[in-house]
Length: 165
Image 1 (cartoon, rainbow, N blue to C red):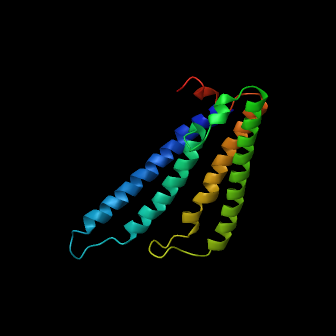
Image 2: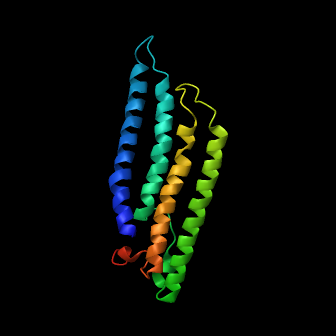
Image 3: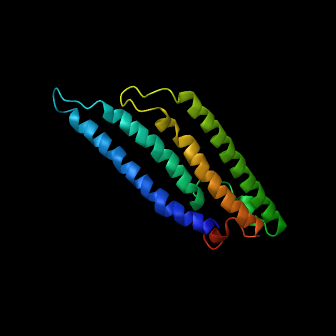
């Protein structure tokens, strides 16, 4: 199940991350270039770059979850076998589910608070800025559920990494 979700993440979310990153770099480049033109400045590029940076960071974090590239201490996991490894898998999945569920709930609550506010320069709703929190938490939750299904089927959580190192 995780392989299907990982394919989707790589194809769709990967392309979105690249597009958001390109817009961010372009906004920063325009901002830098217009500083050297006297009497001409584009004030909204700073806020656009900040918006893109927030989305880039959170979407990148959601994209990193299926790849397993987040910081982790797996010394005991690699030394374990059998039922102990399955216990570790269960704990990891439970933590992922609790974390993403909590962040999703908190992010949705945050969106209610900022729903009537607009950004100062772009004039867009602040939900565009803060919306990244529940969206990315939902993406992590989806992957966590796919991981839970694999763990319940008896698959190792990090089986692909066994041959590495």
